[in-house]
Length: 447
Image 1 (cartoon, rainbow, N blue to C red):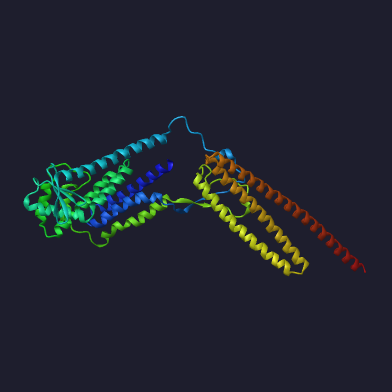
Image 2: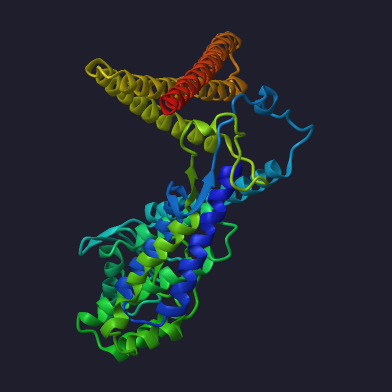
């Protein structure tokens, strides 16, 4: 549930930032096609970007693997006595989203019912519904609803041209997308002006399409005024009067945006990169080498607890690094064994054997660490498992891994003690040889 709310907040923040940029930099431009693409891209990015799992190039989390953590720390916490604030928030969010979705379905049913009741006529690839609703003309996909009482006979073709532009440019698909976005982000205050801005852009595009067909600008502006008066707007429709009349008329008269300014909507790309980096997860850094054994599993910021997902990722990364180190140790041991067989010099053999002993110690350390990491992962899985039979099997595996880890540590201790004894004996032998050389040198001087 925490992940759901984190996603919703990130998604809302994405839409807020992108739409704020639109209001500040693009809203007054007349490059309507790119503005529409920017608004649609903003909706898509706000839904997709928070789902991306990207590693941050700037922030890191240092993780060390504990030799054996307490199982009690991994056990799930007992449920609280009553519903927590997260549950209350979830119920409120679900209620709001459910209400908006029900209203969405109701509006769709209303349009279908109106089309069935009034009947359709085919005209230029459109299904024209001549209805008596007290409102303006509008379209929804290939359905065009016209109140013939409000449209003069000479202006029907212009109204149909306007609605045909909506149909051909698939504006109804945009509207459905904004409805889905509103259901998901109904709590976000930016989603409602976003919907209005996208519909205004639809109107600008349709108006421009009608003027491009040779319609008189003055006559068409008058038609907009006539259609604007009275009537009630159907929420799902691409309507002839969705945007404010003054703004539509101004946009018809405004000179087209040219030069570099027309490419401002492409700034959505660097904005998307900024958002991706803002939501990126910190990079997990694992200490290399056997020195990490026995160090507690902690993040760089000790006040922040690691989630189960972060813990599992850290263990997986550590296991991969251990496999690489084991492979390197194996290759080094094979190389030293080959050199030992080729060498006849006693001193060189002694040096090679000493190196082999060091690598053997490292191999034992890596083996012990590998068992401990597997134990940590198994403990995490055991704390979540509900099946008693599987829990018993996992507990048995855990005991086996524990015994193997103890065996590795025992061998590590024995090899270490043996190495210390041998080193001591070698040092004593060298001291005696040195003493004998000195006495021999003194004896030679006396002679």
